[in-house]
Amino acid sequence: MAQLGPPPQPVPGLAPARNPQAGIAVQAAASVIGVPYVYAGASPTAGFDCSGLTMWAWAHAGVRLPHNAAMQYVSLPHVDPRDLEPGDLIFFYQPVDHVGIYVGGGRMIDAPHTGTSVRLEPVYWQLFVGAARP
Image (tube, rainbow, N blue to C red; front, side, top):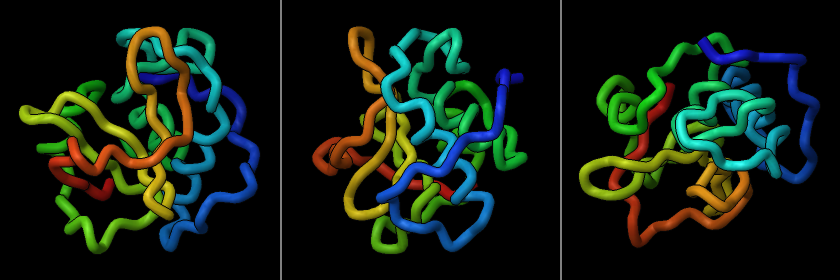
């Protein structure tokens, strides 16, 4: 299970989530922007990979997710991209190999790859394959 640590502090400028749990997950993800990418990482002290970040963020909202992007995709109800809401998970590549947290306005928080850090960035629509709602 992911180490949760203290509750995340609100980060201004993000779209509000309709679902309170989704709001908690988004704020948790935003609170670790700048933490380095680490393969298989799932905590602010160890670093994050993409699915470790989504697993850790949603754990703050009481939702357990597997530590694998493809497994997260198949285990959750899918959402039409036109219905995306802050907190939804968005998945990339075929087969699914990357996940981020949608935060509204065409942006996501993700842990992209080795040599980067958790960051807020535009959604990679050209690589998008689906979305799911925990």
